[in-house]
Length: 128
Image (cartoon, rainbow, N blue to C red):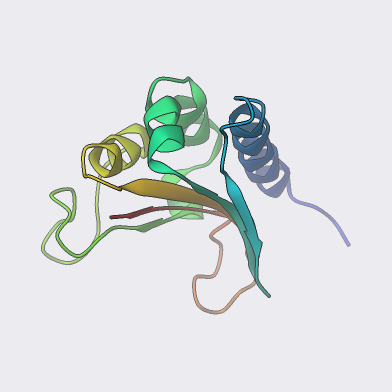
């Protein structure tokens, strides 16, 4: 089985995010999760705020092409276009979540062969 370079970049990016946030101290509450076609971390509101102040969102956007990212926005997000798509950067997605009380983000590495979103290797989402 051949591993595509973009898959390795996405995995490295998600691992870097997790490592940075988990090394933030004992107050860190990044919650890892895994499913049949994804694994990643859910970031608390404080971790989401820390993420927006780091170079990680820019690195994600630089390393993972837009066509290989899945973005999950809250229904009342101001970043969503009428058709549900967005041109928002990873920083903008995290910053909008951080601006909401109790808002956070998640970052997950995806199986690019998953029929739900074929070709996507990284998901970035928000919650509040």
